[in-house]
Amino acid sequence: MKFIFLLLVRILLTISVIFSCRLPEDLEKKPEESLILLKSSGAEPKEINFTENGKKIYGVSTGCTSEKNKIIIFIHGSPGGWQNYFWYLGNYALNSSFCILSLDRPGFGKSESSQAVPDVEKQAVILENTIANFRSKFDFSGKKKILLVGHSYGGPIAAKIASNPSNGIAGLLLLAASLSSEEEEIQWYNRIADWGWVKDLLPQEVTNSNEEMLPLKSQLRTLEPFWKTIRCKTILIHGVKDSLVPFANLKYFKTQLSPSILTTISLEEEDHFIPWTQKPLIEKTLLNFF
Image (cartoon, rainbow, N blue to C red; front, side, top):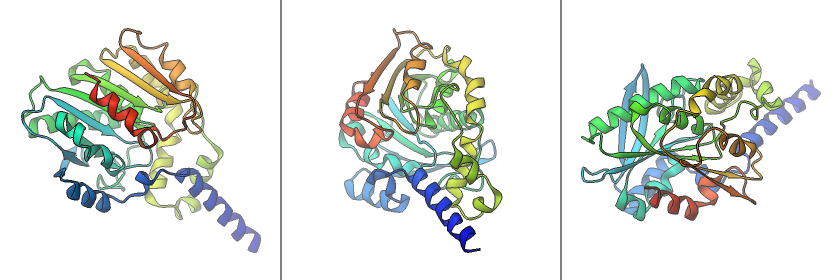
């Protein structure tokens, strides 16, 4: 019995460490704390709620006035939440030029953790409808330029949305994105986290994240034909030393898009958490995107 207990503790600690993976400070902040920080910065955040395809979608926006003709929309990885991008939401230079929206994906944060959608393509449909309703809610005309930013698991969701020309996406920024089925592998800890008695002991967002990871390889295989239909300007940034999403994803994507629309940036000493360890680079990239 003692051996089983120690084994359980070891398994749970290992899974916890892997999923947290020495997170940057920004990723440790809670949504409530992030809202307080945004308000104190003068960014005037607005909480937004949508219902799409029967799923509740929550987001926070800043700088969204009718005269703005450019919109940045952040799609987080797995796990994650809107608050991961509070630094960008509160960034004065970005707010001066952009309306900014950061979303909780289905199954995370206030988008109801009980309503996980472990399917990239279905999430893309839900979020593209959310984007359309966001434009309508703020009376943003079709002439507004939308720039999608997808990190990690959010990358293929953003890319799928951008692959549909009717969505009117003008720009795509992919950060350490999972794009190649060949490079995607189920890890041993994903399998353990799927055991029934282990799932009961894990936080809901970790369980939801794991449910997204398990079918991702086969889902990416289905999605790969869509990459060649992307026509908007695209920038892909990836760390050579990424320990969670292999750098080979960048090399793969270069075979999918024309050099006339795709720019790639390789960061030799960087790991997976580019949005938080490379803030000046990402800020500059966003400001100069259009």
